[in-house]
Image (tube, rainbow, N blue to C red; front, side, top):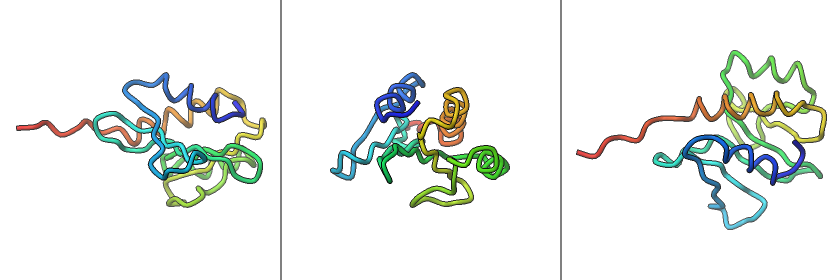
Length: 115
């Protein structure tokens, strides 16, 4: 996975998600949960590569950073809970998909029921 299109396509395979461009800047794509609008992936171009900001279990943030040089503390996000994943071709797709799924699960909350 190296392109924005591939990252968005994979995110859209997850249940009840949509892509959003709330900053009126085509460089910033947010992948959100329907119902709550919580963001689980931020996709943007920086320094010549596509980057993903993904939420991560704090027990795993350092592990991913140690395993891959292209996983770093998140750009513009809480560095304890979020990683930036640089899509430079050095991380196998299966591991990127695991990180996206984990972020999706960590940000999922059922919408409150209306009374």
